[in-house]
Amino acid sequence: MNVTKAARFLEVQTRNIFPVPSINSIIRVGKIPRLESEGSFWTPVWKISLKYNKDQVMTILAMVKKKLHNFAIAFENEDNYLIMSDERLDEGYADMILSKITKEEKR
Image 1 (cartoon, helix red, strand yellow):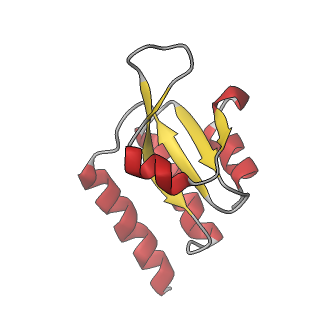
Image 2 (tube, one colour):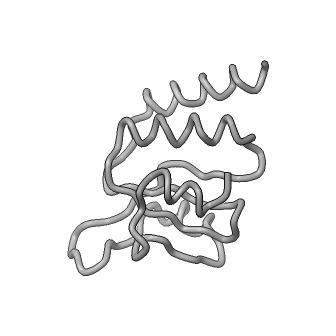
């Protein structure tokens, strides 16, 4: 699923979609400031790339949307993007997502 469809699914506001030269640099830093909101940051939630098929991406997006509420997206191109939120995704829930998409991959 490309970045445009993902942004629509997550209901990301246009001002919260960021073209970047490298999403890996954001992952290393661990956060980026939110617009005009001192002390508030977007934190990386999940990196989407071509290694995931359409069903896996839909599973990731649906599960993330169920748990978190405010989203932003940083993207290199239509197929490589980083879902971010103003909340952190806890490790246990991330493991549940991984488990579910791994099962889908084996089908």
